[in-house]
Image 1 (cartoon, rainbow, N blue to C red):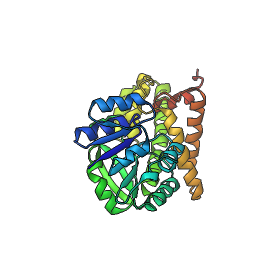
Image 2 (tube, one colour):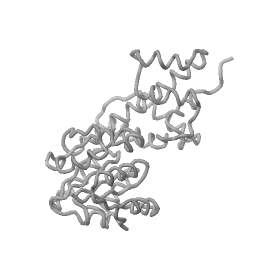
Image 3 (cartoon, rainbow, N blue to C red):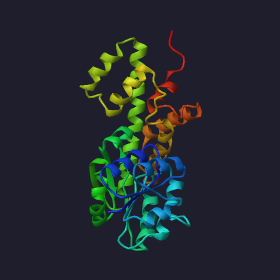
Image 4 (spheres, one colour):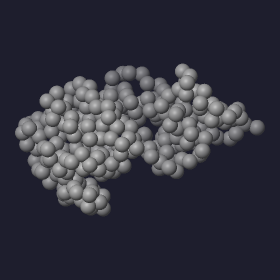
Length: 291
């Protein structure tokens, strides 16, 4: 099965490497050429446009930074959909709202192709390990076609419903990730101000009801102050959480914790922390220390 991948960023690059390691013929495209050349040296075919990738592939994958880029790559004049063909499966791994996914699906279906919104979670490390969580929305037959491809980089792969469902799942995930990150920052700040042993605090919380994945991830980073190792840059969360809050408002679903977290994230971004790790959310909270 010929596979195409568009968007060789923090996640797209290790995912593409996993596809090559799994033996899939792979055609790739990226806005900056060096990453294309790097994968070409490893056995991929470099393409000069999204349409060229789509023309060479049975399953076309994208992993892109924002909604406008997703819309351009899929629906633009020389985008994927412009050359989509019957039986082809188009997959978007990006974080977007469900309305964007449904619009792409409608355009793809008009050309006889299928579309899956299949956001991912797990970070760069799990992409390289091939253990990402993939939450896919779309037709069952399209999911079955794409499943062997997903398994090259996904360890927990599930079809969660129709088109748009994957995007909804991802927005809910990002709401929790963001709120839990802020809660972890507050907990570590309180522990630090109290003068307790932060290592002991994390060990106790890990086996208590206060435990969370983001506390186990962010706690050690907050304790070490190593925010520059940004495997999950804060700038990505302002976009994702913003989409989640917009969707919540559309559905009249109250999300006070999400709104407050978004305010703190936006403040952190305005303070120039966007390229730091998400654990740096503790910095806007610190302020003047109590005497």
